[in-house]
Amino acid sequence: MVFLHKKIHFTTFQIIIAGFAFIILLGALLLMLPISSKSGAATPFHEALFTSTSAVCVTGLVVRDTASYWSLFGQTVILLLIQIGGMGVVTVAIAFALISRRKISLIHRSTMQEAIGAPKVGGIVKFTSFFIKGTLLIEFTGALLLMPVFCQDFGPKGIWMALFHAISAFCNAGFDLLGTAEAPFVSLTAYRENLLINITIPLLIVIGGIGFFTWDDVHRNRWHFKRYRMQSKVILVTTLFLILVPFFFFYCFEYTQGPLKERILDSLFQTIAPRTAGFNTADLTRLSGAGKCIMMILMLIGGSPGSTAGGMKTTTIAVLFANSIAVFRRKGDSHFFGRRTDEDAARNASTILMMYLTLFLGGGLIMSMIEKLPLEACLFETASAIGTVGLTLGITPSLGILSQGMLILLMFFGRVGGLTLIYATFSRTNKSFSRLPKEQIAIG
Image (cartoon, rainbow, N blue to C red; front, side, top):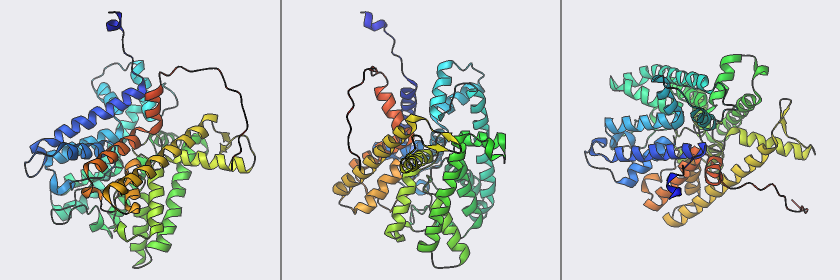
């Protein structure tokens, strides 16, 4: 009976995945309760699970309109799930430990390091405290900025709505409370011309999506860009590029009618929201095929490492681009800002790209065949799910259980990350130091 005394040791990657799965299941059970719906009826498990997964994975895809279907209790559960999912399950656990003044063990520090992609364990507790305080401050400030608009339209209820949308935007979740029974799933289309909404929400999305360590660099070095870490420089430059280029596309080819202010606001909002917030101020079904394609690309790229956003990440695309430049120039290493990247970076980036494209295309094809829907709409849906975005062309509520289950898996994959799942599954595989004979293979 020796095996009974054998301890089971979980890796940090397995702990991260188990933490997300546990919170999703707990959230689904709470949302199933009659008190969670306005009608007082119990919500079917698959719908509660879909909503809980979407909230924890900060996606925003919903099968039930958040405002008209869920009660105040249900909306509160969803908001808490969004906050936990945005900050990260491990971060929230560490936060409670800090509040209760418990000692943070080395395994907890190591888990936190893997959860937020920190370069080292040293100083991780101090950084976590900075991140938590910064998160609460930014969300509170965002709520204060949104409050005048929502209080003017909804009275005292506007305070709750401002808080909900500030947290949802900062966590890149995309859940909204503006739908009604007569007009569900409207997102922020009623505020298409509101300057305060169109500035505050995108700002919260960008701040939440650039990553916690980029915050730290900005906080420490202010305007001294040269002092930033290479990763922070790459993130900021890539983010700026992914805002400016799509903005000019939408402005020149999609939103060509109407006043200048409206065209600028529409173009800017629809550029930032797909990475990876899920709000929209315009009717996405009216976009051209090229416009929808641009949005799908933005959704797949997503935000940055160690942030509230999902997707392949800006650094993945940047590394692939730099590696391509190195190949064109017949250089051995790819580099940024006078620093060369790690040799494994390009391999990891290629692996992530292949996984995302396979799941995105495979999921869209399967959904199209199952649901008998246009492939374009299904690909848009799977890109939104795996990128943890939440934008849709309107087909989410009508999907069957099988398609909903597939989207749940894609959202989970997009939030915890492909490499995390791989390392959690194969971390105990014995490493072999032997190498097979090498032979050339033609590429291209």
